[in-house]
Length: 126
Image 1 (cartoon, rainbow, N blue to C red):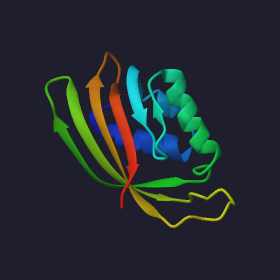
Image 2: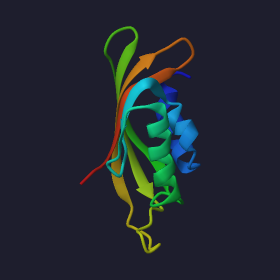
Image 3: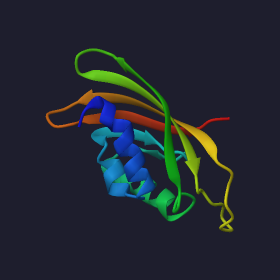
Image 4: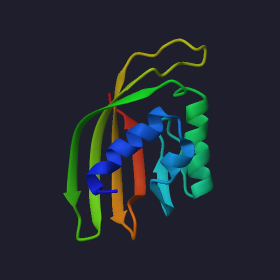
């Protein structure tokens, strides 16, 4: 996977509610702050956080990719900022929530096969 593929793969896994696929984008020693504010520090916690969101508020959510910025931090690291629009989220009663903007910020490191996030923060925009 190229560096430019990372945000697309994230959006595809998020839209498919693929918690294992999302967790696989994060390094084994990486960390996550999820869109609902969950913090996770191990592969198991990260997958569990994504699974909880996929079973709840984001069970039918979709991401539309917006503006991205990638900045090299050296030959093996990069900073990714990717804007998304989130639609299809639902509240606890099952009612549709309005579309909203979200920002994925990730510090990435290239490994033998893929770029992986050392830290991934996915936050709602005001």
